[in-house]
Image 1 (cartoon, rainbow, N blue to C red):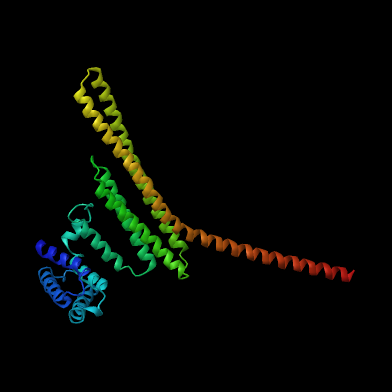
Image 2 (image 1 turned 180 degrees about the vertical axis):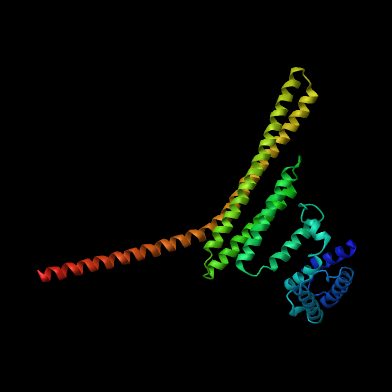
Length: 312
């Protein structure tokens, strides 16, 4: 595959979201069509043996034609998604990006493909499921970052911020559907179980890293004791500096975890609330039915007693 061509197209895709109104969108979209036409010519889709794929391909060019003529009539999100089906769906760059981590060159492409996937989810259930799946990816990213000897706070922060975003989006989707009057109890139950698992996995990751740093602190303290025995001031100074640094890292990660755990639990609790509300409604309904049956039973017994007294 021509990676330079892919990179150019992907750059244009990313820019599509940020074109200011003053720029010539028609020229941009025509240029984009030119690049993608060349890409398709080099990488034909005849090997995709489904009629559905051919239909999507035809629709793709229809959208581009409309967009080039009257760009304002075509939602950019929809256009981006259609283009990305072709470019990112079969791109070696997109595939390779799935193993990338925050701070790496391909990570923005990974997030872009997730944006496309999210835009193609049409039901509340699929949207919430997709977002919770992305949250699980963020946990895997945190794990990979934390397994490194030197944790980069910036890359860790990116992964955790995106995790909060995915979890928050999931909660917002369910909240929105609930406000519409949709019964989201089952979806809320399934999704909250997934998010709980994510949080537990994340908790274990931070716990393992904390244990590792504590062990490192213990080793440094022992080395300091040995250095003091022979009055090696140079080593003592160096080891104390490393001890302070390790201690600072551990406390920073502990604080980071406490903050993120609180936010993640808040979003998960919002989802669980929908399940509990449904249970409460069902309980109230059952209780009401029981009360009505008891009233009927009491009324029936009272009527029978009255009839018996009259007969006597």
